[in-house]
Image (cartoon, rainbow, N blue to C red):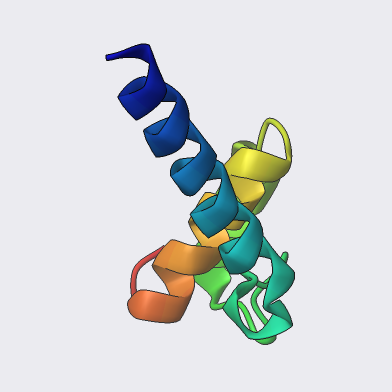
Length: 67
């Protein structure tokens, strides 16, 4: 059983490394042309770190009309 767990952990790390190595899969850090609602949200509630900023950028890329 430990061999299976070790192999699956290695495989997961390999997949993660492959996903991170492709520059086309990275999330932009900022929206190119934010709407007034997005600018207001960023002013009143700034992101608390790179993970939240990347999450907001991904959300805005998927749905540009949402603040």
